[in-house]
Image (cartoon, rainbow, N blue to C red; front, side):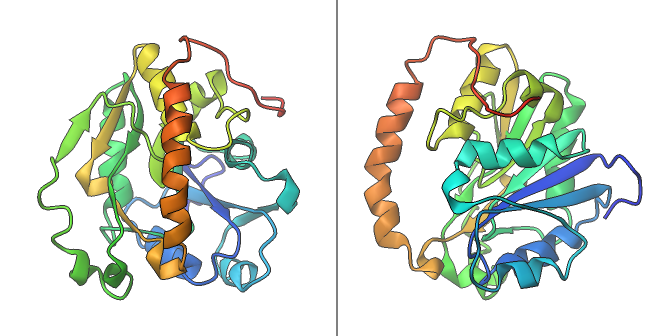
Length: 242
């Protein structure tokens, strides 16, 4: 964790009943070689061990009511209170594939001033939650990186805060706010990078949510088809004052 008053990176992690893996996620976060960061947890009403576990780490905790939760709003609130130049977003049950250089690997792309955001791939191998050795070959066939894809994913991403101020995550959306943000940045002439080294293990099976995930797939596809029709560049909606 950074000892500076203004860290380079602010992690923003949304949680609700993430007690099963949040301590493991935070353990990997604090093992990173890049240490100039802060961690902000946005919790929307956890009733399990989540809050007890996150308080064991030097994090900043922001609580919201369950009925206040919206994917975009929770992120916007956390980012508004952040101090970093870059915002690293990771799910409360996503495990970085690298125990120490994951954040550094993602940040290196911002040497290019046209890069607005960096994301990675996610693989759902449940055995990787026991040991990442079991998921060692999951990413072998993927390209090292893809440049200028709009497919940003907030399962694991880094974005520039200055560009977020111009286009906050759209709170009119009930999801796919990451895809919308990526499309907007590309429309404005910026680049989104997908880097294999910045990937994560992200399994709904270990959480017992696979049936719900399959049911949501058609909803995601429908939502994204609507997002694709948006005329850009455009403005996004947030109820926060930024």
